[in-house]
Image (cartoon, rainbow, N blue to C red; front, side, top):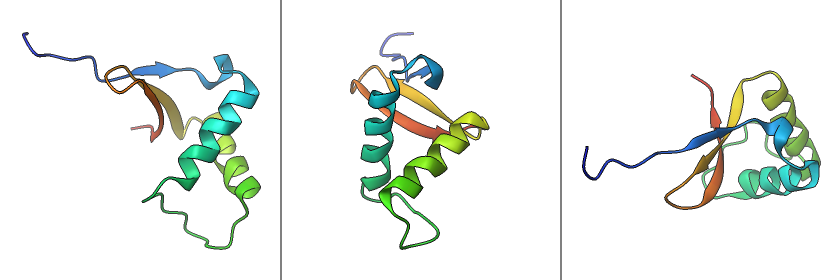
Length: 76
């Protein structure tokens, strides 16, 4: 349909360079509005938490084609 836009593409986190993935997660966890239950977590703890969720398939990396940005979203 006209005006239809591809929302985003799932990117298997295993295919992302580990250093790039780490930077992406750091950017994600410092973003405004990111709600991290236990305040006082170090950045490293937050990154590890997201990595565990990726490995457990609780969250996934989605690349938004319209904004050219990657996001980490909860799997439905």
